[in-house]
Amino acid sequence: MTLNITLRQLATFQALARHRNFTRVADELGLTQPAVSMQIKQLESQLGVALIEQRGKRIDLTEEGEEVLAGARAMLQRLDDLDHALNERKGVKTGRLRISVVTTVNTFAPDLLLIFQQRYPGVGIILDVANHKELLGQLADNDVDLVIMGRPPASLDLEADAFLENPLVIVAHPDHPLASRKRLAPSSLSEETFIMREQGSGTRRAMERFFAEKNLGFVAGMEVSGAEALKQSVQAGLGLGLMSRDAVRMELDAGLVVELDVKGLPIPRHWYLVHHKGKRLSPPAQAFKDFVLGEASEVLRGKRRRA
Ligand code: PGA
Image 1 (cartoon, rainbow, N blue to C red):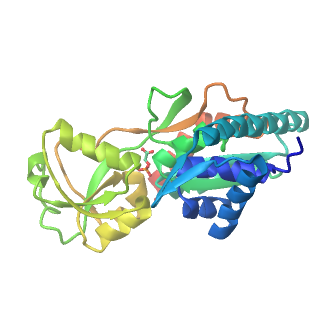
Image 2 (tube, protein in one colour):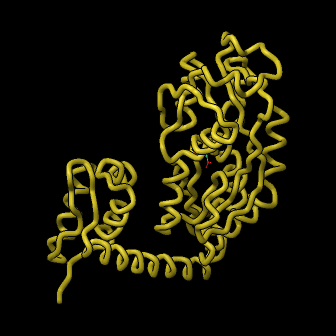
């Protein structure tokens, strides 16, 4: 059998199986949407089977698609192992480090990367920013060396080390009627409009859990993607926002938003460095992990104090 399938087609199909959406795959891979569909069509025609079924906007994998996905994962994993083995020979000085972080972490990840890059100038760094659920998908597909996120689900086969506190707070426009109140009971928030993060966001899940545990409701306002959009919406006065204090540190200092004084808040959480349990970390990835777990909290606390 002569197959002319390419690794690129397999990687595109793997990304489509994860996103179930052509536009998102195109965004992730830096391709146009027609180029993505063309690659999938070519893969289907080379293999002589249909890999996906489209019903309206919904994309499902056929049984053959599931089988091809498992094969593609195994092949791409082998290639990744080979890359690691070669990098190990070269040592930490060269190689590539693929890191993905949740949107909030993007506010401090560059501070860590700057120090790491100064120590290892030969290492090429690829940084991707997405939400909690998308990063779990990247870990499952072995598309990334290391991830920085809120606590991942214990049911997944992941190694997750906490390295820094991540208090979640409620922020408001400075003119909001609750802004100057002290020791607010959580029940006084139930009539308030909250701007919501998108589905799949860890922050959104933490917020829903906070209100559910207290048997309280809240008014769900506009829904926005990413920590930056949430912050901008609070700053514009569109509603309250529950989010990581890390995401609004500068705006709090500048008085553009205020932190509400609510009993039971901040919600204590942590940032975790995460990878697959069985993953063989390349020398640059191991060096970055050692750096984050050993030094990041001191570096970032220092910055927080100076800010
Ligand atoms: P997210 O990140 O809200 O941007 O998904 C927070 C987390 O990982 O918990």
